[in-house]
Image (cartoon, rainbow, N blue to C red; front, side, top):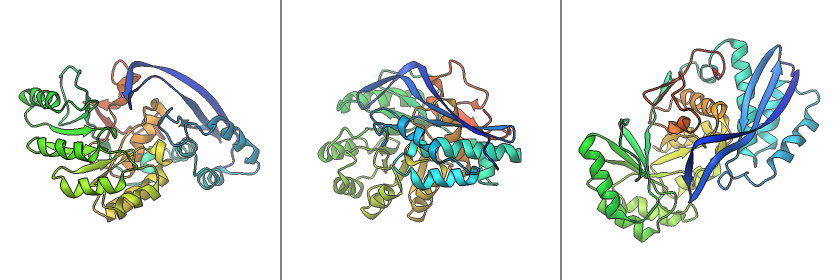
Length: 334
């Protein structure tokens, strides 16, 4: 398909409530929307490296986007996708945004959802865990609850877990530590929490501590998930070679879109490692892209898609009981 035009539009969206991660609070989401027009169809994508988190957040992404336009002469849609994939390996957010726009457009031309374009046997629904922190009100929850651990107050958290289980006795916990523990502390938490119904503990140690992660995995009866440790295929191989993880938490904005994410999921599956897809606090276009990627990759584990409420007061039509239902609309369904 011949490209008629490409436009890049900056966005700055205020979140309905702040999101805290690594002791940093996010109040707004910024980035750029990609719009590719071909044959009176428009494909949408989102480039949104997360400040202080994404590997390319400080690599002058805006200037790099401008440089793309110097190389567009004569490129058709598929050539553009291949060009971005090959030349922007250090800019996964750019890969994610342009790839999404291309696949959105191609699937619209076929009049099918993007996930179905990527995989005819894609899922129709993605299950999502609920999110809590220790200060949250305990309301209606999904079967699996993710809790961000922000302090070393183990006894306080145990009381919080007991409070939840007294109300929802069959829940499974996912505990996200965001790298705050050392190996000695992590072993204490694992030992103390062995009687709780914990599906996994996520990134308990800093991502640089590969040998310590391996030690913890050997010690722990609770499965170990890695998030910050997974940024690309090479990092996935590193986790596998050192026997560091039972679960990979993959963010397509970090890994660089569908093609890169698929490679990580495939190598994980070959090594009996489960994969979970989560957002990087994207706005609606990026959120939908993540959902279609998870559906195309047949991710049946509960994923991290509870972030829609950062931007919507009420659930959009495709959110049902906190789960994501893939629309029959062409493309992203946006």
